[in-house]
Amino acid sequence: EVQLQASGGGLVQPGGSLRLSCAASGFTFGNYGMKWVRQAPGKGPEEVSNINHSGATRYYANSVKGRFTISRDNAKNMLYLQMNSLKPEDTAVYYCGTRDNTLRGQGTLVTVSS
Image (cartoon, rainbow, N blue to C red; front, top):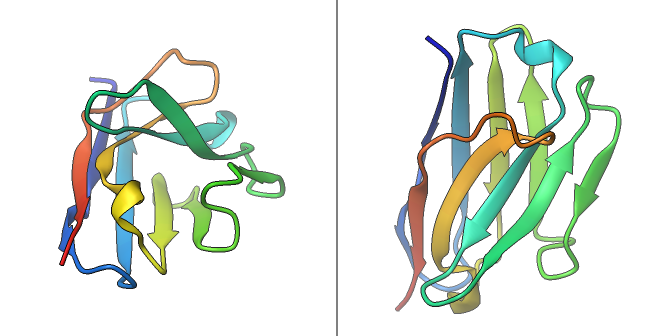
């Protein structure tokens, strides 16, 4: 079964950190560029970061640049998003998916609030 399983969300205070994980199974993970997309309440989706199949190339939205770091471990079929200096405006459901939009996992909720 092809699956992307995101985890690691939760409630964190402003300025705090979280690490999101995305476990891939059922397909050749190392062949795919991957991305993290978030959707805040009442807003459209925003691609916050992506990474190419090897991990050599990374992109960050201006809203998260310098605070978030995307990484992957192809040996473990895992995608990560390290989120530091979190702000209330980072509150959203975060989804992992392939860059070509063929696969998307269920989301994990990140809430940044004091």
